[in-house]
Amino acid sequence: MNQSDVIIVGSGIAALQLANKLSKELNVIILTKDEMTAGNSYLAQGGVAAAVSPSDDPYFHYLDTIEAGAHHNDASAVFEMTKKAPELIKGLWLSGCRFDEDGNGKLLLGMEGAHSEKRIVHSGGDATGKHMVDFLRSDLDANVSIEQSAFVYELILNSEETRCIGVKAKLADGRNAEYLAHHIVLATGGCGQIFSLTSNAETATGDGMALAYRAGAELADMEFIQFHPTLLYVDGKTKGLISEAVRGEGAVLVTAEGKRIMDGVHPLKDLAPRHIVSQTIYDYLRRGIQIFLDITNLQDFGIRFPTISSLCAEHGIDIEKGLIPVVPGSHFIMGGIKTDLQGRTSIPGLYAIGEAACTGIHGANRLASNSLLEGMFVGGNLAKWINSHPAAKEQEWKVYNHSGKSFTDKRNHRLFCGELPDIALLKQTMMDRTGIVRSKEWLMKQVEWLAQFNMEEWLEAGLDHMQPSELNRLFMYITATLITKSALERTESRGGHYREDFPLEDNANWMKKQIIHQRKKVKDGKHEYNQTALAT
Image (tube, rainbow, N blue to C red; front, side, top):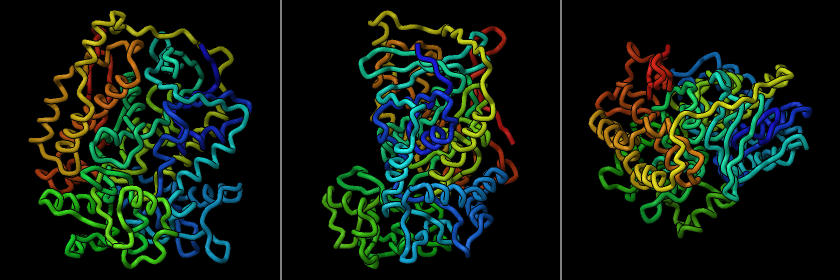
């Protein structure tokens, strides 16, 4: 059994920012299910939004964030972040993290969708996430240890189930291990892999959300999924992200005949909020019309976007012809484990940061390049909070023994795991029924299909004997169920949630209302599953 002060599950921007900002006197362990660079942060092509230009202001950034979020945002949280953004960027820049500069040594600022000003800071053109992760990793101190290929599969609660005190993990050699700490932080990223079309890393399977739900934490806004408009599409499959910065530099969306599809749809045309662009492309795809990103008017594309150019070349797309085939795919979840701006969840001792968390900052649809920013912002806030709240000298390490099935019988274990959905079928049905365009009919079909796999049993099940591949299936299943039930319950369209049977925002009934999921115990000792409530 391993004991430390802080355990961080995940290794993206939020996790690394936290680890760097924590006191050097604290013992910190980072557990990551794969390699340190296998998450979404490392793949991030877009930059970081910050009002650093003399012509810009954090209030303008705030207004753009609220507008993109369909006014579902926590306004005070948004303003706190946009005020802090310039300081965060300048702090990284001055400490040695290299961002792209103009000829005068000033930060080079780009434009992206739904922004009113050029305020996107990049590093290495379209390799911002990689450069930032590499820099933050290199800056870690000796008080931080890293264990790769450690798949966290369960949260450990104390004997009264009043506090989170640790995690269980599957190690690379097949052993199970327990890690105990005063502070447990979930920085596990998103859940894009539950959809068949996605920009996300293979590791983005909703682990943190499923872990938190099983433990009894509150989750919020799970229906709000952002579908990025432009994923490279070759031979019927998505091959990677084509950054929004390409449209920011002047690329436009067209049919094979050259018709510009965003004309007349939104005043910002190709730089409209992502949900509007994604829904427009999807409408063409449903009619069998392939959409392309026309880059013919962009100069020095290969120099400006080296990562995208390499991606296209790898998959046989000649950028000299000027047309890149694209489709929308799942990119970011605005919902997640409900937290405050310090990352605190509804369970003492348990925290969540980054995409796994729902702070209310993103509202119903995240503004482009606010994700890395939020990770740094809340990760820094949590570090400050932990540093100023030292743990008691004596911590109760008495472990809560899970009362569910242990699956000690391997035959029964295999039989039970066979009742989980096939991953490929789960991903396709989620895309078809809980994807870009939703309706009561299709959501009901998905709810019924998911119900046959008995989530109530899986929430009670012991997981010690399951393999990582089986745990991936389970966590994807739990997260998919929460998203689908939330999407069915919200009878309006807002941000990343579009219902064709309720195509308009319903401010009278839904403005500022969150759907909360929480697994709770009732008086007879049994659990309620997927309990939902509205919070204003």
